[in-house]
Amino acid sequence: AVKNLGRAWAAKNSSRRSDRVIAVSRHVRDFLVERWHIPDEKIGVVYHGIDPAAATDPPIPAALASVAGQRFLFTAGSVRPARGLEDVVGALGNLPEDVRLVIAGSVDRGAEHYERSIRKLSRDRGVESRVIWAGQLSPEAMSWCFRQASFFVMTSRAEACPNVVLEAMAEGAASISTDHPPMPEFFADAAMYYGARDSRQLAERLNGALAAPPELQQGLRERARKRAAAFTWDDTARATVIELQRAIE
Image (tube, rainbow, N blue to C red; front, side, top):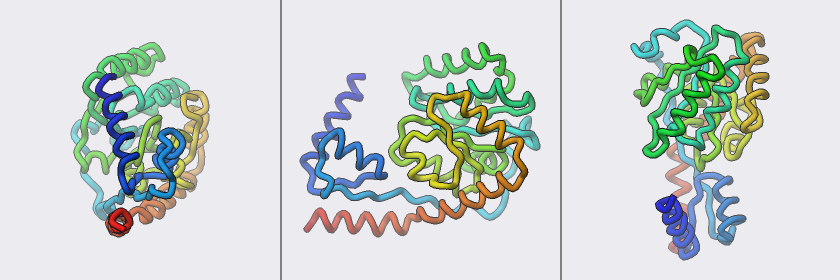
């Protein structure tokens, strides 16, 4: 907690003293303006880019062979309290019993208690056997999960520029996401949304999507790839140079 307070102080002080601030999303810009009172005119928004997905399908990861050809949900990111995993674990008990959940990502140092609480929640909800803790996955394994999962579920409550969202869209994942900022800023119409911390609504969204005709999922996948094409590293580089030039001027 003390370390985070120190980081916040340093970031706030740097933002106030700087000639120009690059925010990685409008959500971050709004935070800087509304919470830290940084003048809006000295903030520029520059999104991260995402590399195009490989044209060939990746092989089945050995650790996930048990879900190959099965219906499963996929979620990825550092395991920490802001991850919001309780949303999807809480929803899982209200989904068909053949649907499983793959959780990818390593546990942040100091967040071991959070992982234990999510494991306990899965036991309490009677879904422990349906949850696969995959740990840190290789880029190839991540690609496989994005492409093969019935739905990628984004539950995070604290993101600046959610790289995993860009990766999911580049891979053409059909996604259901929390409506917490900045997720709608990045997904736009390439995802379905539910209210943060509302596992019941998430279950309703997932049940409807799982029972819908294949055209729904395919439409989400196509919109995701199209949306991902708007985030290129060339654009990131050009916009960064412009912001640096404005700082110089």
